[in-house]
Image (cartoon, rainbow, N blue to C red; front, side, top):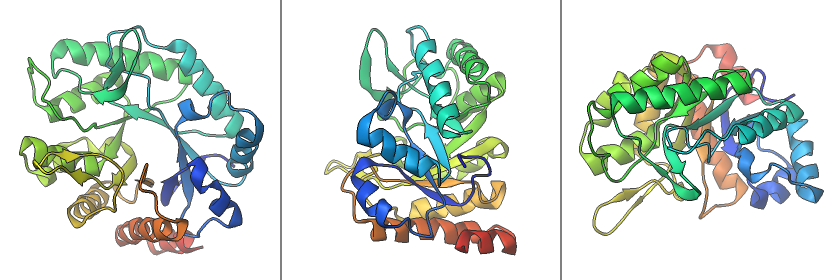
Length: 284
């Protein structure tokens, strides 16, 4: 089956959820998201479990370590392995972060790219090369960041727009990242959302976050989604329609029933902005 015709609301595919998912995938979950770096070259029971699910459910591929804005050479070997992995499992959508995460080695963090003309050209060229290797347009995710990149020649919206237009790629919209950045860097999140190239949106993330005692907001994916983030999601659907949307939950993971309830909230927002037949498909 794979990710052809993917729609509705989905959930990140995590090993700790596999036993519960084997007992039955809740109706609200219409697809799964997977980080290829966590599964490439995997053998044994994990590989068999993944195959069993990709044969029956659509999957989206969301990368973590391509470092599209980084100074090191683009990892074309990784891209070719990802292409083979996606072909093997029938996945047809790949997205990555508009950030960088390594130089001589992996830094295990997603760092902001300087908002400069040079960085636009550098990043867009690497995105185009990645698309050439994968044989598809990819989605770039707007990232959260905690220190404004120095030497900015434009604002974040202008930077995102410039990279996406020059690379002729798609937008992977993360509404929680917008909200987190709006609190940490003091801007209006709704205005920011509506200034993005939403017409290029191919995929959406929604998640929870954590507020430190000093007020810093951290994009943890470790808590339920809050109302202001749901409002941003609803506003996005009003412009771009019910784009496939994944609930991110990476730690403090509740049981599958609770996750399914939150995925159902995504589906309810999608139905507000979709034809009746879409809602019927989402329900069964």
